[in-house]
Image (tube, rainbow, N blue to C red; front, top):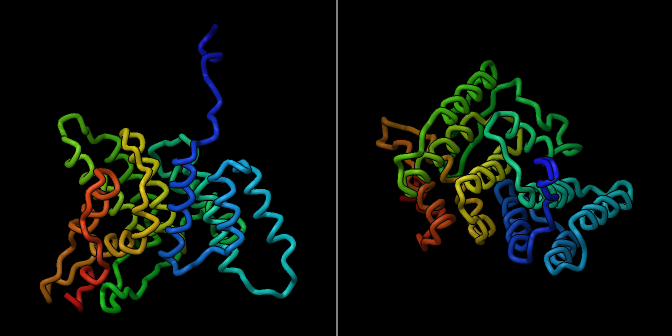
Length: 270
């Protein structure tokens, strides 16, 4: 038997994995204020229970929206359904490369035929009023040099050695890397969802079994933690901090029970 014959095709995930993928996928829609339809929930449950394959679930959702009556504006529900489906699909694949191409590909697969710019680096500058910042915005990367910054960050991460780091220090370093990627905000929309998928797949390459309900219950906290990790207002004594992101990842990876309250991240409410 030669080397090529030793490879095996990846099999369907087990019940626990399917449940986690779907819960994570559905929970992540909250970062953009979206709620999937009851039909998507029913389809997801059927897949989790093993009644239908993922390919069958994908076919059902596709046909469901092809048959929707013309003139019914449910574009954001459709987005929530299709992106949930695609996130679950991506998480079920045990594949990953540490490169900007991976992140760009994730964004394209999540938002193809939803956003015209799916998988395309934005060519305009953006800002966003954040509740957690009392209406202020994070400074995102300039559209002029996004690709160069991505290449730099990925090259630096590839060269970094984790050999002498314990588990805690490893997670804290990855958290900073993920935070830096998010701050670039390479795409016009969908950055947090794409980064979350990328982060989960990256953590798995370190051997972490990411199969709990943190993203399902606290996806908005995840986004707010990323915001706080990238915002400074020295004039008023506010500094960027990874404290909240580390709490989130500690719950995700070490099964800790740190209390995650969005209110505690709001710079006006503390």
